[in-house]
Image (tube, rainbow, N blue to C red; front, side, top):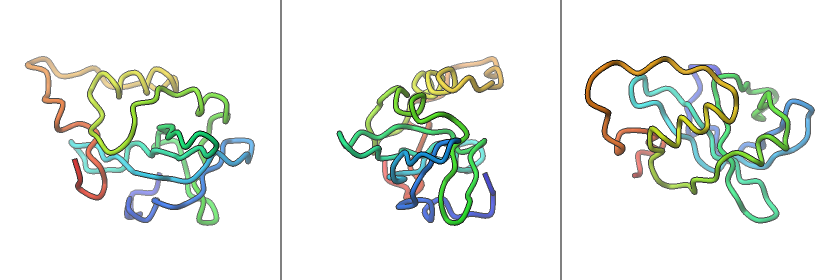
Length: 125
């Protein structure tokens, strides 16, 4: 994902899978608390107004649309956590596993607070 893009500008963009099939519209963007970089997008999939979380790191912006390098079926089967809330570390881990993404091993020490994970780009909790 391009790092110079304002994550709020992603909201409302159409999202497509790797085969060019429409997934839906970006509803919300979640930032990594450590870096502030956009990490996940919640894409409204339409028919049942369900939001599917997609990773932004391997995704790209092409012609003002979000291109997600996964099949639509995998995206629509992503864990459903609802939107408008923080993603807990466990929820993020489930998403990483769902998409087959590697994550760095956590640093030793006390677990981080749930409230700091997956905050919304618009600053709401």
